[in-house]
Image (cartoon, rainbow, N blue to C red; front, side, top):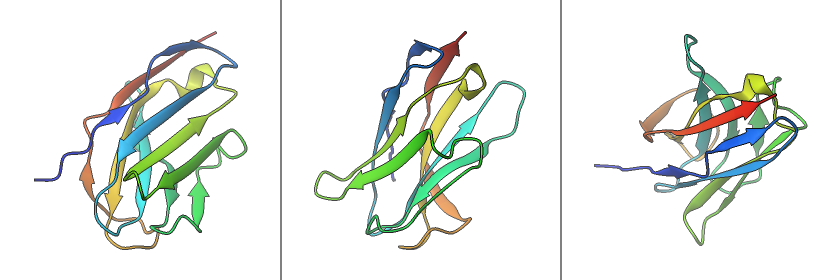
Length: 117
């Protein structure tokens, strides 16, 4: 049973920053997703196993940065210039290969991020 635990979510003012963390699993790409109330879950960012490839949703490009430390088995999501529309439950997920794809096998329980204006 793979258990992923996200941390770092909290309530912040618009314009603020947060860093989310999550444990990694195996030699796999990792991703961050989010789900706002009443909306479908959406992709936020992905990173290859080696960290050399990343991609982002257009809505977060230039504001969020995904990174990983394989020595610590941890993936991060640095979120800057936060907006109220970033409010959501954020989930980390394990990819199906070392490269970033659209397929993810395992999911965390989520961490709440609330951005107030």
